[in-house]
Length: 224
Ligand SMILES: C[S@@+](CC[C@H](N)C(=O)[O-])C[C@H]1O[C@@H](n2cnc3c(N)ncnc32)[C@H](O)[C@@H]1O
Image 1 (spheres, rainbow, N blue to C red):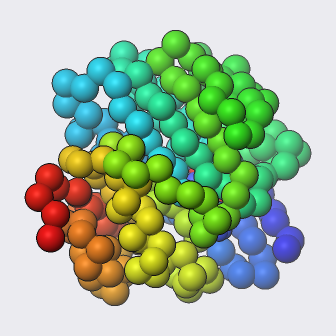
Image 2 (image 1 turned 90 degrees about the vertical axis):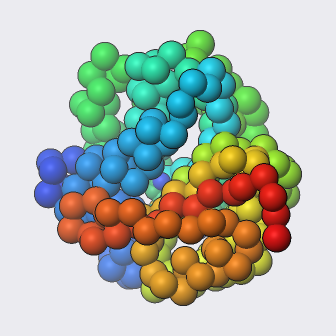
């Protein structure tokens, strides 16, 4: 499928998939969206923890990974990050996105994130280890009760409805630790109800620029 790099409203770039008319991030601001939906929400909920594990469904350009690493250094928290990706972005696209410029002191880490091999745990920084797995989420074997935060950043239900289904959400729920938070930019009522039906306690939160709402779920100790 044809992919094109475009500039979004906050000046940061993203990838546009022309055949689907779908973007990797919001056209109202890729950087702002990543910060609002994932990084700030996680930051506000890390509390006093010294070490956390994060699962990202849809590693993509590595933007969420890079910004989470920045957060880990600022908070001095240790992050074990798992990124699942079925169709990795190529080197030319990564260069054109120029995400280094979003955190200039950390710019060499963006290359480190992408140069690290797949299917192995790599220490990117003393505060940050990364395990990238090249797989379809459907084929990935869940690691039960492991992740404290889940960044669910698949393409939208309009283009990939198969990733917004109860069996997928059950696998996510199984992977989540007790006390975990599930975060997604998607605010669809059916998605919220289906996530609730697999066991997450769901909340609507205010969305990033251009979007009224987003969803957050939490996994409590007492299961239904
Ligand atoms: C919205 S983009 C993710 C953006 C990414 N989080 C970032 O910061 O750049 C969705 C990603 O999911 C990936 N993807 C699509 N189908 C998938 C599947 N079945 N399993 C895992 N990843 C998939 C796409 O290749 C794409 O990279």
